[in-house]
Length: 226
Image (tube, rainbow, N blue to C red):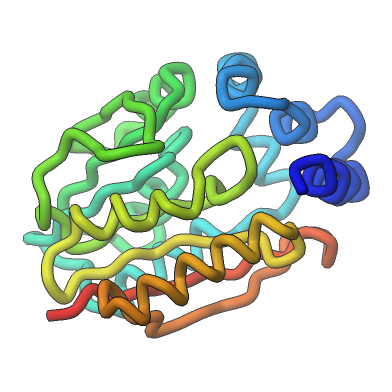
């Protein structure tokens, strides 16, 4: 199954990204440590590469935060796998988000870029995300996690750990890559499992194309029971 996953994933990326682009390199790695080395190099150009390729999912995430009532001065937001802080940037610039934003990522170079944005992040944290996080349970109104539910990044089981950190009635906003099989099948199974167990409910979904229909993303807005 892993060999088939690698074949489909690399084919999808080669059809989408220009040869030599850092994004193709990071998604062609065989393990998480290799991916982090690519991010070390890619960090200074990460935002410009995403902007050049027309990626706008971070804007839609920011809109969802406001739509579901999490944009107020008391709001506590955690952006997981935050990278260079694009979600925070869109929240502050386009939605005038006035709450507190914490960001967390495994890569120090990406977080360094985020720290230079001047977005008044409350906490900038470096930590591996696969597993329990050293944060207080039920401390956030909303958690976002964009672009990281892909192979060699986050396993679908990460959703369980993120839900522990959300206040009753709060929201988890994340995306999956609809064309990426079998990984996306495992993600869907985890979503179904968490819903059937009553740990969360999917309240909204949105399909977003980037610049190619070979790179389809599905955005999920999930609510924790009140």
